[in-house]
Image (cartoon, rainbow, N blue to C red; front, side):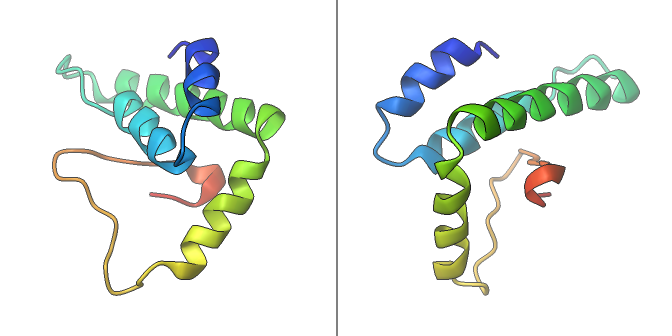
Length: 93
């Protein structure tokens, strides 16, 4: 993932969380190689790199995530068919 492009897009977003989920979806989309260990290792590194980038450059996103979580209908889980979102630092699995 090109973090410079991500930052530019992030600044122009009305809903930065939507862009974050798109980025996570892009990272965790299976490549079909069949090497599960390599896939998880690479995607974990990319997810950690994205989280560090957000933490260091746009910490306000954590506040937005907290506000959104507080207002979320807990009976309606977030799920996108065919995708896997895993972000341990944000406790999003």
